[in-house]
Length: 414
Image: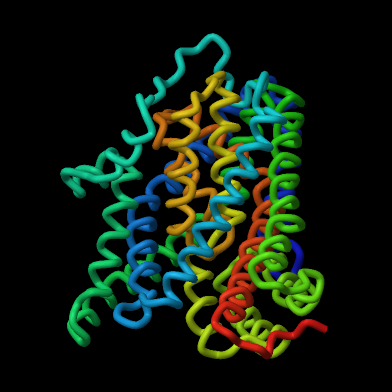
């Protein structure tokens, strides 16, 4: 989003100002802030939830269809998709370990839920049931009912189906979904521009009910995300470069510095793509054949940082609400976060929209959940910057590893 121009027009500054005003108002109005500003947060969260299904559907269909058919789904395609699934799963499991060890949401009352009846969790008897639930008997009903696992599965199936249409016959349907995705990007970006107003309403209400404890819980949550992202960025990805690519991780990171900085400052994988392409081609030394296939797909479907964030965020919300998630429930979150990361649009804070998808997969719904998600927005911008940098780094590492597996010898190692 905006990264230049007057300070007062930059989203991060407006959000920071909204947090400060919300804190002051929350303490000064003796609880009346919920009546004065609470509606801003309610409307903002409802707007976010409004775009989930159409954004997920168009994003995943477009991303999967962009892989192409025929030869594109051959050896290079299998390697690329396998790498992206591997790194996303590694990121999610890292986040899972951190959030279960640190327990940032335990004891926090961000939504004023003490003494209130909480939503009923959807539990599964075994892991197989998770995959049964993914197959919708009625896709339209799944969309209207918010059955997000089923929506994701149907979207992936549509995308694969488009790749199998005869050449020339897929242009119309592919174009419809691409234009629909572009439209949803415009709408979602516009909603995210309202972030400062939403934060003002949610933070002022939270501070009025929970006081300074609001920021203690948010701080611990942010540290959990940062810690998990750092392990993935500084240990997991370098290990993959070393083991799978037989490359020096520090050399690769040095060569990708410009793209990493751009990703951090823009919070957008899509906006960073031109810089990523140039850095991987010119500085890392990967061929145009590999970069032109792997990196655009990565900017759409490979979101390690986002997948990690969605997993941690969903479990954090469960902890705040007082739920002790079973192994099966956490497995559901892992699977949903993995699939949801495919559909996360490459724009600032899009991952926060997707978190509703993950929470709803285990039955975490209702106004309390929406309130907590809204409060999490207060610290989302810096976390979004970091996770975008992790996303782009993973894309570039994947391009280098796959190029090496294809026998390319021009990879820069000095």
